[in-house]
Image (cartoon, rainbow, N blue to C red):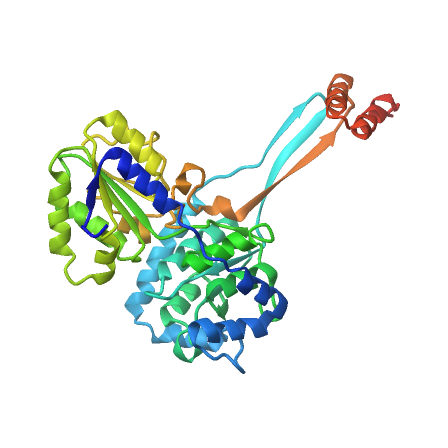
Length: 421
């Protein structure tokens, strides 16, 4: 599909979306197993193999002096911008109220408790660009949840050094534990631990297909945020929308990655062609964005109910509603994050709107949620019994017998038969 923003029928548009969403991740078991067995030595070998960086004789952990030097080298205006962004992100997550609760019925007191995860690992890619925003986004949610230890891993550049802006963002977020290792091997190190890198409870952060595959591979040994793919945006627009703004937003998401997924659902005739012309005009010279847009798609669907159903099936990471009346779509269309109106581009959410830009892709929004401080809290329950209620215990016993578990039934019956003081 070479034409920019190819227009498809509704059914073909959804079929194409399904085929793209089902793209297979690479097999990274060899990498994960190598790190699990070989530890730091394997990390150095794999870094040389994949990043062409020789870390022989160098500590994987970045020294405090390196972090401080990078922070000092950054323009003061850059630091001020990162600090302002981090404050906004932190305030959004801190305002989210999550409470424990308790119930008491038939002598049983049960309660739900929450506690922050103790140790989290953040992955910060630095391939096409150092994603300082991801460092701030994830750290803000984790800090708001009360996480005590946050470690960060990022692939080293030539000479083994990390991006100074990644280091500065980490310092702004109060992260002192930073490692010069990237890719699938860093995910394995966080999951299983090595001599130099202690294992974490959860791994969060965007990355390429190999990072996503590694997250999937280690899930269960450790928790992960999302197994996410390339960035996505779906713009729903009617005749009141400006084609130049739609094109700008599609191009903005397309520049993330040649595999980025961008789409337009037009409610009125002629809009697709108008946007296509704007893309051609605005996109000149932006090779990555144009490569991504070579497999972008559009659909003209004037019927509101059918458009809502199609958008819900698409289940976008980012959904823009550039329509006169967005209310029918909100709550009816599943998406990772929704941006309402021409003044709310996805790019604002990529940096400073407040909600995290770590979001489900590949139709994952049908079941998964974007990252918040909730992802860094674990729940546990506590059950206490003040008195043995015979009706309740007999109910439990009958269910145990129904399942063919006589020892469960006996455990319950003993409580009923005992004379409690």
